[in-house]
Every structure is written in structure tokens, then in C-alpha cells.
Length: 352
Image (cartoon, rainbow, N blue to C red):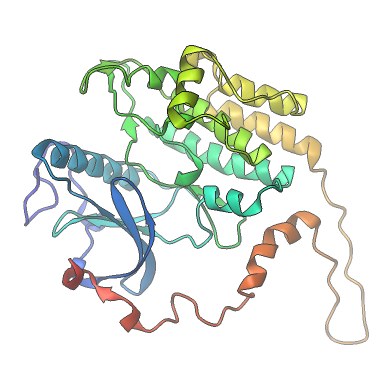
């Protein structure tokens, strides 16, 4: 599919030279994550701290072709779209192995963050704020004709101060076409739209119609999870949850939600994809709801003292709750990734 000299020899896409990283300047450090198809490491590229995703090539010719195709799609999508709520793409290379380099976000995944808080829930303003970040990222993707297809807390990464969420992992992302049908390859069952799950029963390679509204369904499940800080479809396996959603129209309960918020969630997970709102509408609904729970804070003038230092007004509870996670490391950590000795990282080429 590719050659040792170039990035890709396929007609699937060509990577602009500006995105082609130099493996000689890439240093790989400790592993920070692992999935079914790849491992993610902390690394350095041209003295910038980065996340290095190393994609497994596979064993059989079919598996190799599938992994390379997935890799090619992910790089193509990342290089095409930039947004403050999408993980920033830095570059990629195919040889000596398939590598995707992005900015490193130190806040961890949304899944890990929510687990660390249980049984406590997020402040509602924080939960809706995170949902807005996600919806804006999805609006950007859809405006470029891209369906993510794997929206879930594991693919949402927090900034170090836990104030911002960014969407990552475009391995299953596809360009939407009104004339072509999609393959049956799909995302994680628990967050997956019912019309996607019904494709699993197809033989490999068969195709079925669906559109960008699959992401609206996944968003509804993520929003429900942000509010409740519970696993959706608790007590069911991933497959059982998907089967119940697809064939029995089962959804998590929205009965205990405020009416406006319940309306957002239930509209996004409707069985009929065409009845689900697009992300521009979802953003409008979230902003309208946020305005009802987060009135503007009164501006308090700072207290004056005889000294040169003015005493600032106290932080709002929302800000304090978000900043609490930083107390472990302090505002000026002694050993950041930038400060570690270079020997901590080993040369990419020597490792592989």
C-alpha cells in the first residue's frame, strides 16, 4: 500500500509534505495509552512535547490492508480540519512504522476523569460546558463532511486544567457521501447509534445507508453520562446495550433531568436519524439551557489596601472545582515533561 520512500502510493489520498514528520527528530517516551489497534506514547518532536500514536500493522494481508486504510483515513481527516476542540495534528509518517503525532493533552481522557470523580457528579455548568466543547468539535467535522462514528468518553481528552475537552481518534471517521453507502465497520457498541449496530449482522464488506446523525445519537449518550456520571445501560454488556437500543428502542432514563435538558438528550437519541437535530441546533439548545442555570456573576471591585498588592475577589465555586485537580502538582510543578532530561526519551528509530 505504501513504499519505504514515500508516504503513500495509493490513490486514497496524498499527504501534504508539510505534515510529513522526520522520524530522526522524533523521540518516544513512556506509554500513556493503549487500544485495540495502537499504542500511544508521550514523546518529543522538534523539542515540542507530543503524543505519539503508533499503529500496529497487523498480521495477515487483509488485516494489514485494513489497518493501513484506517491509518490513511485518520491522517487525511486530521490534516484537513483544525478547531480548538479537536486535538491538534502535528504530522505523520508511514515508514518505518505508521505513526500519528498530535499535541499532548495532560488532563487524561474524559472516561478516566469521570471515574476518578465517582460517585460525585460534575457541576451541571461544567457538564454542559464540556458538552458544548464536544458539540462544537462535531459541528466542525460535519461542516467538512466528516462523520466521526466513534464518539465516546475514551476519545475525549481534557486539557491539563480540566477546563476544555478536545475530540481525538479519527480511526473510524469517514467522509459522508449521499451516493455511496458505508461499510459495516463501526464504533464502540454502548455509544453506537442503532442504525450502525444493525450493520454488524452484515457480512464483512457489505454496505448500508446511514449518515452524520449517528454522531448525534452517540453525543446524547455521552451527554447523559456527563450529567449522571454513570455508565449508560449499566448492568448490560456492550453488546446487550447495543442490542437493546437497536431492537427494543431502550434508552437510559431521562426522567430525572430538567425539562429543557431532557429535551436535548431525547431528541438526539431518537430512533429515526432524520428526527435528530444537527450540531448547530444542539449548540443553540445547550447555550439556551446554560443561560438558565448560569446567570452572569456580579462584578466585584477588588478591595483596596495600603500595600501595593490589591486583594482579588474570591474565585467562583465553578472555577475552584475545576482548578482543584491542579492542587496535586501545584501551579508551578517541579518536573514538567519539558524539564525532564532528554535521556528520558529514546530515539524513535532505535526503538523500532
